[in-house]
View 1 (cartoon, one colour):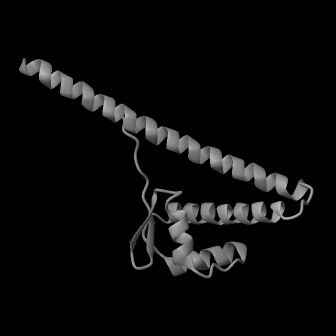
View 2: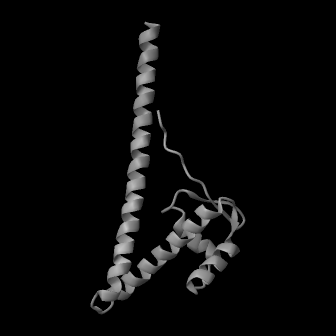
View 3: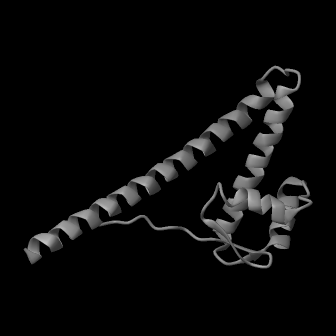
Length: 134
């Protein structure tokens, strides 16, 4: 009976690993889909006819998304903890846009990009999560 019980636990554990891996892969593809849709939207925005009101909101949210992607790419490239001020300077150097409240901006970014973590007072880091390979 002991061997059957151990086998049962092993099977359940493996099923949990498969579920976790599926969630990670799905999240990866969802993230890539969002990036591609964003890029497509950025390409199409200048060509779109200007509609009253709705286009401004979409442009602003697309621009915020662009800034978030820029910051994530910068943190990924750095591979070390980076001060919020340095991130703010990077964005200003790259785009000319000044982010007034960096903490609020990063707090909005982190739920969308789980790889970005706040380590302490104003320190942000990109930590790549490895997919389970069994």
